[in-house]
View 1 (spheres, rainbow, N blue to C red):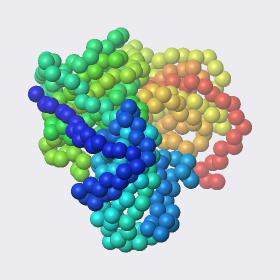
View 2: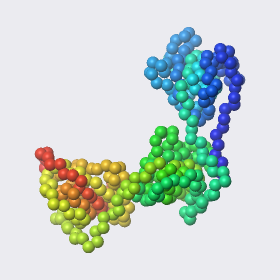
View 3: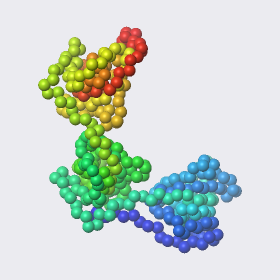
View 4: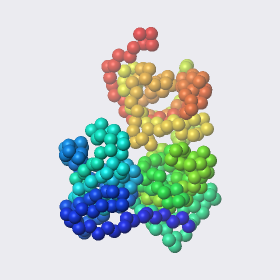
Length: 391
């Protein structure tokens, strides 16, 4: 069983308006102590208002003038050592004077407005503390192994339909190494990650672990390195052969973010003089597209082996193309010119009308035939003048 835990700060008894000196040389005087409020701890995101002065009372920095408190993760070296030590003594609402000697400030460095070997004086107020999401409590829970090598623990059941390949899912997560050290978390960014299952936008173990979850469900995923970042890892943040632990919560499902491939069985294939092929799946009776019209398209693009290249659906978006222009590959421009508003068609683009003999490495191979399942959403009639290639 992998145990993940956070350390806690030691309690220090402090009286108001009395100067204390720590072992590091930090001096601090508290003017206001709010003992009933939350106290800052290592790993917390803290928000601090401050005024920084030199020995001669010159102000070298001031958060109040910017009307924005400084935020940072406490205990991670994001600020000078004297700050990490001093803020860790404070409750939300506390105010104090921190006198920070050079050894735990900027030392011998010349910081421009701060000369070398400067003792710094900070009047600070702790405005807000944002606690990190703690690892799930998995004590006593069964570990469920899958044939792939992935294991998971069901922490909380969800409701509704299960997430499946092709769905866009929104997931909050915290990622840990097996020693409990956190390396990434959506919570730190304030929003869940969005991805389409089956599009390989995350490591394989993630896709396997999210599949089958319901909204509100929480799982701990135990991902072996072959299903994560492999033998090479992802330097410098993920070492080689790293087994990973993810605490995940499924927040939302957008079902069928990518539609199923069009069924073209028994339908006629039309070939144009250029070599473009298309199959009408849904017919419409609309005005023909002419050069200068703006054609609004939704599509899924595939390689010949069925692997998805890209899709407007997973972006919840559409593409606007000016008919007759040279803004896209020739096969796309020709396709929107032969289709009508409301029509759906499979378009097969030979490499000569796509990305040519060389392709577009590393995504599109040489001489790649591309398949587009296209839906013409709208045609906006326009008077745009399309220059000829010679102009």
